[in-house]
Amino acid sequence: MTALVELRDVSVDYAGHGGSVSAVQNVSLTLGENETFGLVGESGCGKTTLSMALMGLLPSSARVTGQLLFRGQDLLAMSEAERRQQRGDELSMVFQDPATSLDPTFGIGYQVAETVRAHRRVSRGESKARALALLREVGIPAAESRYADPPHRLSGGMRQRVVIAAALANDPSLLLADEPTTALDVTIQAQVLDLLAELQRKHGTTILLIAHDLGVVAQICDRVGVMYAGQLVEVAPVVELFAAPRHPYTRALLEALPSRGRRGRSLRVIGGQVPDLSDPPSGCRFADRCPHRMDVCATVPPLVDSDSRRRIACWLDPATRATAGLPPLPAAPTPDAPIAVGPS
Ligand SMILES: Nc1ncnc2c1ncn2[C@@H]1O[C@H](COP(=O)(O)OP(=O)(O)OP(=O)(O)O)[C@@H](O)[C@H]1O
Ligand code: SF4
Ligand SMILES: [Mg+2]
Image (cartoon, rainbow, N blue to C red):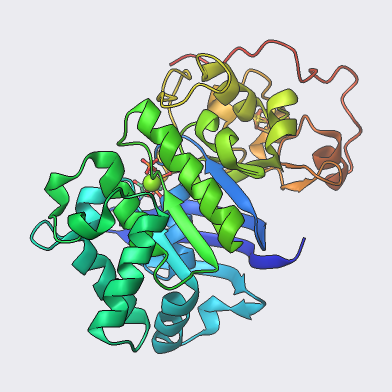
């Protein structure tokens, strides 16, 4: 796998009046060229913060440490002007709610054409032709006659297609899609995910798909990273993660799916809550909810290669234990053992 993005020990803290919030802690992750990678976790786990760090769009209260490499170049070492240029050339983002991405007062085609013009020095006629081509590519029916329609004349799913068309205007190498289907009903969600998968295949774009729901990422992702309270706890190919989840939090997420593969459900059925990130636990952040907690869990488990395809951060795992010179547990819970999640 050729790396497009490499995050090394990335942490993000937000400064606030009452102290700082540790939103992302020591995340290391590689996204390959042409890969569709899913990032999942409950609300407040730091998914958006991590993607905004990649985009260089965090508020000034955020402090980012570590290394964010894009094609080997450290984004944190770039000037603001260099980052803006790089963002315009290489990155695009699709958010949850198309209503906030589109201007209600302008026609959809005009808005896509303006995005084209923001990236390329082209005439109005050329930008219109390109906008029409993009609208057709994302499946807007009768694109020419809908060109001047304002967003409210379109359904939510069609509006999200328009946002995706605009996001493709710069032919990005990396498309960050932050909960792009959460606001849509289930059938439309599947269609928008299919569209993203089709565009990925056609253009070879790397996609970072953020979702609450493992069912959503399973639709189109090659690999998945599970985040919990700012920490990346497991990374694995989707198929292997579903077949044998290893981290207790991943297993709890899978158990929270009403049926494997079903989309669009909140994961809040997992007992307990994500810890307060303004005063996070000093060890494993899942410890309060974990039925397997041990003394060693008071120390943060590092994310290590469990085998050639999987990474895991849990003191149950022999590879994590080996980093601290600990022997494998005599009766480590098997991946298929039932999961009991701690009290609310
Ligand atoms: N601008 C900010 N200032 C202070 N804290 C913030 C800010 N933005 C996010 N946070 C905090 O950082 C943590 C991570 O938030 P983030 O939005 O990245 O999570 P998320 O996984 O994207 O959640 P969701 O699924 O709800 O979108 C949360 O505790 C959140 O309250
Ligand atoms: S066993 Fe320990 S390290 Fe693993 S998830 Fe539970 S509390 Fe965290
Ligand atoms: Mg978010």
